Image (cartoon, rainbow, N blue to C red; front, side, top):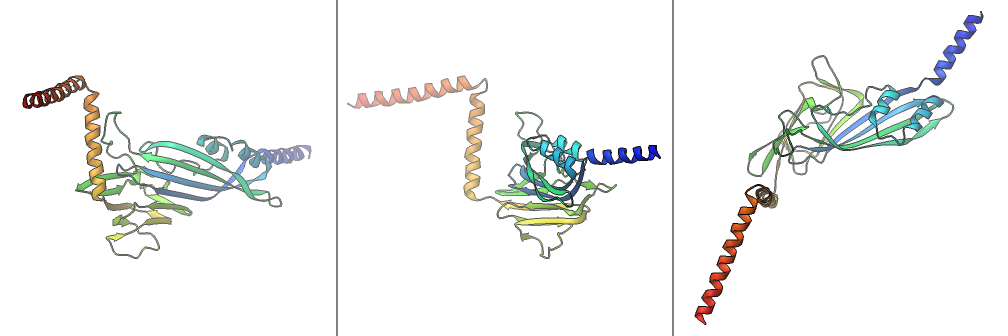
Length: 277
């Protein structure tokens, strides 16, 4: 009988010191999509926290900017980036754990939330490279005609639960939202969101999916730049090319040549004026 009592005490002790967390909801929003295919990602991971020990673990991580701390201590599979870091270059990452809220002392449960903000870029082969590595980034971009870009979502850049065939699974508590740039024309989407009933192509501001298997996931939209944007990009390109040339081995000789030409022009102009006087 004594061994049974000791076993019960041991089980009780283990249950007291074992952290207990349960996923509640995941919201992933992709927005601010740029001409180079980069985008801003905002994630809200909400979960339930059971017991005093779990609350203490949670509170100990409030000042942590390390996502692995939360993944290890909560044991939740969704405590991660929901884009694939092997395919997407994650920059400007911020992790903001929120204080526990809606606590119920009788049930011994509180609500916790992690907020993740970061920019998702395609990968480049080197610092001097201007073309992204194919297959990287959230979106591939094709400027297939003047002032018009076509954006295609890269499904392999997402990191949710998947089927054996590699299709993304969004459970009933997992939400994916894509906010399209202003003036976007949606060219293709599959599968369509539950409340989507428009005929393509069509102007759309945002799309959202939940509780669905994204089989053969496809999202293609186009954006037409204004003439002012095109002129600005042209001038910016000239400045970049000029700056690059100046910093190259040909820069100093080019500067010397420009100085000589300008000086010669001024000298000839002044000499002609003196001759006329």
